[in-house]
Length: 205
Ligand SMILES: N[C@@H](CCC(=O)N[C@@H](CS)C(=O)NCC(=O)O)C(=O)O
Image 1 (cartoon, rainbow, N blue to C red):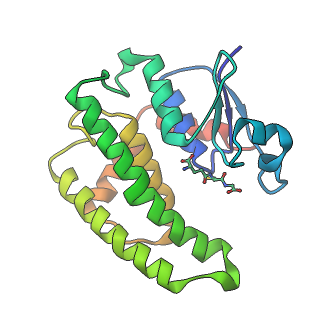
Image 2 (cartoon, rainbow, N blue to C red; image 1 turned 90 degrees about the horizontal axis):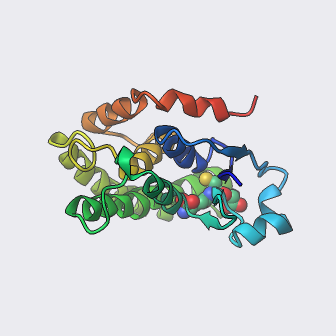
């Protein structure tokens, strides 16, 4: 059995495809058409009861959801690549710190803004948008300061934290959130990585 990733590249599955490419790991890609409700089918809900992508099917048939957890699992399968530092090391703790920061202090606020702007129609809450923008301003300030003297989130080592934060910033730019020069440069560096262009191979034809 091989690794199987469920979820279109234009979703948080992007992170997992990017990690798989960085790790040069073969996998089967299943698009999952969310417009057709394929993520709500009985079979899909058995893999992720929340009905969200991405989901990874491991080579021994287990299912994992949550993009950051999937990326971390994959990185640990090939520790020699260095996408996740060794368990118990200070680098591991710092990678986890930024990984959680990316998920809770960046991605989550962007998602509140996106849901309100794009999906909620007359249920849209300007207050929720404004509060999230305010919180995000603080997170992006911290990120900007950190990037002033760090090449990647943990110094010179590109890790899963960069994949999660980088991709959150990419999709967040659709919301026209103002980014600092440091953040723009960081995103450009992410895009310049050798394996980054390969992610496009998984876009639907
Ligand atoms: N925290 C989750 C979020 C997953 C998520 O919200 N996925 C979206 C696509 S990016 C989804 O599947 N939405 C479909 C739905 O909510 O019905 C992760 O990082 O994997």
